[in-house]
Image (cartoon, rainbow, N blue to C red; front, side, top):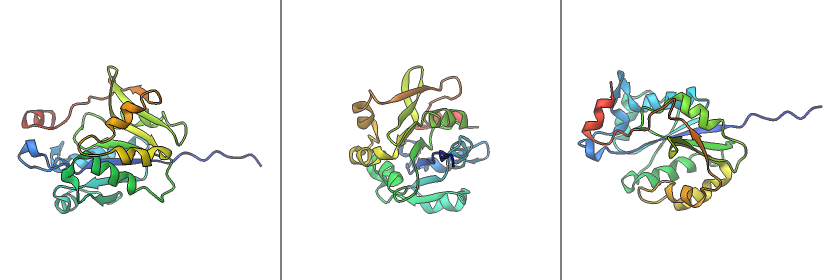
Length: 201
């Protein structure tokens, strides 16, 4: 009997815990874009890009986000330490996958609505093994989403402190990092300040 290769399971991890300090304290997950909260757009980008299961890390106004956004098909983790910065949310997101039969995590940020399913699918397709390490690039500059093979999660989590997320880890492992150019299908702007709200429709 021929050995069938099982399809790798690439989970989507959406970091949506930020409090939007520079946006007057409006949680970024609930900013409206095309009539729906940003968090729903990001979940759809992960799902349509081929990721599943989808895990969402909430923090600021978590109860409100869960009440107002449709996250019914997602696993939701609330990060009690979200104010420490993105690092704690990345740790929470990877921890939520432990014990699951998942080969890699593809990490997306809620405040980058210019990054859709095409960029997610492109980075997802860079998966080769459980040591995979890949990231979208925009004109050669590393950005999101980022793909971490499961064998890397422990080390990534160890280095994820403050607002760094995985930046230090990615710098230290740049030789292993596969950059996937996505500037033709996505825009990597952040929604950080009130001026940035012009990107939302």
